[in-house]
Image (cartoon, rainbow, N blue to C red):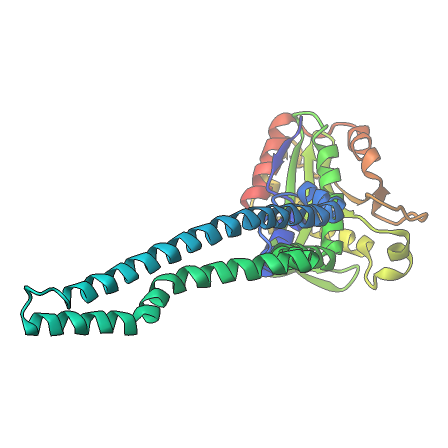
Length: 345
């Protein structure tokens, strides 16, 4: 199995874009693909789960209303008896012959006051339980008459989060397609032997821009999906997961030119003084060794019918056999030196 370094660049960028939109649940493209595939089922599951919750709540609430009504009736009856007993007690004391006139008047006043405040005191005891019972009855009546609406209300927050995630995922479909393509390529490259090293998301900036005489372009930086270093040389790989429509109409820029640009910069890094010592690491008794760089464009969905100069266009299924096809030109130590030089530079 080949040695792999760094995460794929498109996945790192995709995660950052998801986080910008408040989506943190995905750790891999596979999880996103499963989310898309199961979206409708998950939506229905949320509704079904909340419907079961509401049905259970309705049944439970019906039982609780009955118990609460019994408790309230018992509380009202007990309070009525207690208040009436208090009135009778003070009324009786107001008629006791052994009490003084003042004591009788006071007892009579208390009896009158208890009668006057009878309903207010009863209300103070039962109003809170009555209000609670009324609220329970109102909720039960609502659930019985508007079950579907209650289910939608309870499902709203979960469905809103789910729909937002789907909207964000749909808006990033091109990035997701790129990740799918890059992961297919990584899985293919893993099948190379341990003498190969795969550097994912190869990014380099130049303090002094490279000048390509053939194109007249100054190159300040490059970012390529993969660089493979092995006995058969160095391979710069860019991956595209394009549809037939995208191949024909969807892109104004050329991925072939992108690969050519990156290949020129990588070749310059490895074979000139721009490499800050990389070139000096690979020596032969006759002099510096030229390190071959091959440019590869991997199409993981649809393939163009044309061939292009300086860039080999392949499917991911043919990538490994292409890399292994060439005659070995680098020894194990040279491979490691090149890999270390590229990662340190």
